[in-house]
Image 1 (spheres, one colour):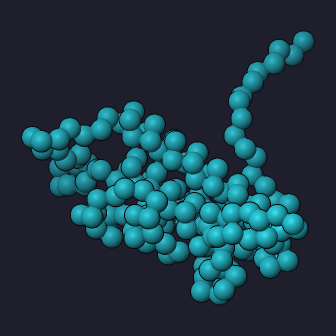
Image 2: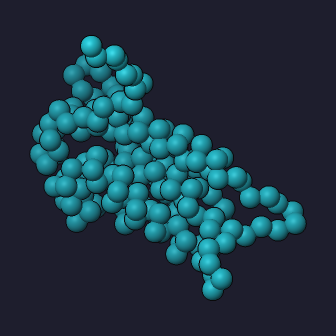
Length: 168
């Protein structure tokens, strides 16, 4: 995996009592289902195999970089992936499989957040991760000679409004 629970803790509040075996499936899903399509198959596979290469450390950790006469900030893939994983954990992480079926635990001192609240947090965090992703994509486009497996000019369209027009 490209990140772990401690990386998520750098960007979102997550309970210390959450065990790795509870959060890791959400990290793996975010990595494969959210990040892989954004990077493209070739760059994703190379990143996973060679994540300790200096160029990938820069991509993962982010930081300031210069392009032309300007200085920009790359938030880094760790931030993007951490927020995607957290969004998945918020939506799916509070359920426990028991011999009696899927349950959501509660106690006398707390009330579980309703599913609509979880969906709202999930949606907002996915939107946030995508906004950070756009900056990472700018970094990749500007530094495409360092990342030849990145499809230059590859971009993800920013979410907009859906509009239906009448066709006569």
